[in-house]
Image (cartoon, rainbow, N blue to C red):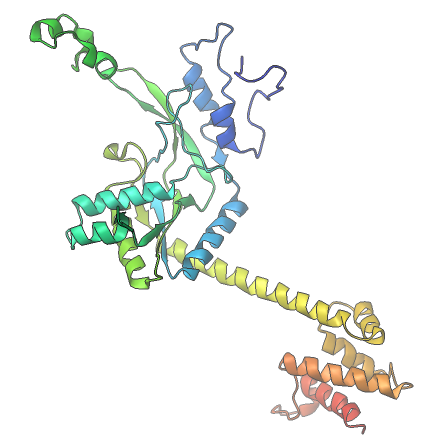
Length: 378
């Protein structure tokens, strides 16, 4: 097998595990023979070598969806998760030796729909199907020569690993599309002399393989308004969801490809993951701030905190005070007690009174009393 690359490129014969499958599919076609022509099964063999694989990285896809969701929320926009109910293909018109390309995300390595494609889909829906103040929406939403549109469109990105498959199209009228305009004279007599160029049912179909996405693939879809208008974004998103359901996105939508249904349970999951990620980010930020704060403390306090097991610093210091770590240095003991009191107050653990039935079992209250005694020089 020959690959149309530089000499001594050392390209592997098949895609390495975990590689960017889009780069492999687009740039490493290796089914040419020694005459730089393609055998009868070269195209289908190439597509079959990639089909039935999963592409993308689940962690990277979820992180990208969370970043997009955070951006959309910052812009006061709206989002939805829409799942394909049959095959999906996009970018078939891109150049490729197998005659049909596929639009791959440049970094995530999965098929996707560019924001411009989502904009075109919504505009097509408004132009034909939306009967709610159509003319005004076309101007306000999509703009005109004198003004920009009010909407911001985002790429539609899969939120999970994408499963690929081989599909076939069978055009019957190939020579009509290629050479029909070249029939001399365009009279009935000249046309009938070249039946192979006519768009007729007697032509044999020509199977053309192409790569497609399997059903049940969820996509992150979002719209925002330039002026942060929440209601406008919601109205546009609702229209876009209708367009995805009834018109479909990508290629071959008239044949049922690319139609999507909203999945609200997936949206709730993504929102929960964002809340979880935000909570973790806040925790790490607090840990960083606490570490910076500890670095500014006197050495005799830092040493105790660093020597102790991973726990709240106020617990470590109160235990050290209880054991008399600084009983021979009243000034240091006073500083430790004041810092411990401050940290307990920041953590909401400073309890000078206890509502427990047995205050002696209330650890926060007992720590507070012990630290308070030192702070008061008792």
